[in-house]
Length: 224
Image 1 (tube, rainbow, N blue to C red):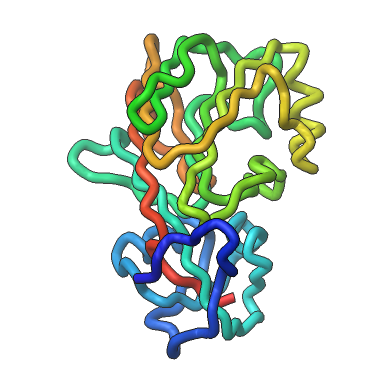
Image 2: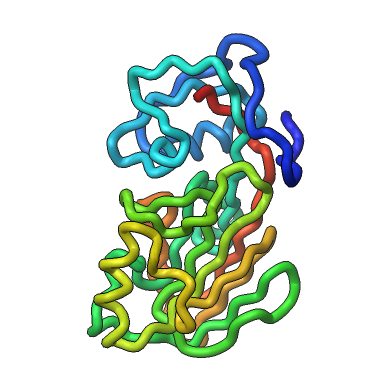
């Protein structure tokens, strides 16, 4: 398994050998393979739904000769006794690209790396290793191999949400005083009221009141 990327260090190196396995599909398929084959070298044949492929510049036809190490997100709290793995993003609440004026806020607490960072009303919490969400530039500073998860909390008023969605496509929705951002390696999210919907790598999952997300750096290698 490769080491986490350090500041100023080039990302990627010539492939050390043939791929250990080939994965076709979306980000959830890549994440599942990573969970079952930690440290493996993967040739990823992405579907059009893959946001990670967009970040990496991959296409189904491309045969890469450079390997890059991707971080993974382990999500606890969706299924008793086991984690769900993500390679791109975890969204709790209403996804930003689907956030309308009628969406209700919930009282949430977000703890990052053991410290209470946000407490208050919000519609959405994002924990992302990647950059894009359904093609929108959700986390402009996101890097899938830098050893950090980017965290966003959306506390927008109903009037602010339409403008945010329009700017989301190009990543100009941030910075914004009502979108709180930080980075972390562990994130705990707790909703005070009803369980909130959760989306993992673009797929809807079970609702939850409490979720924990832990980043594992350089967990899998992909040819690009």
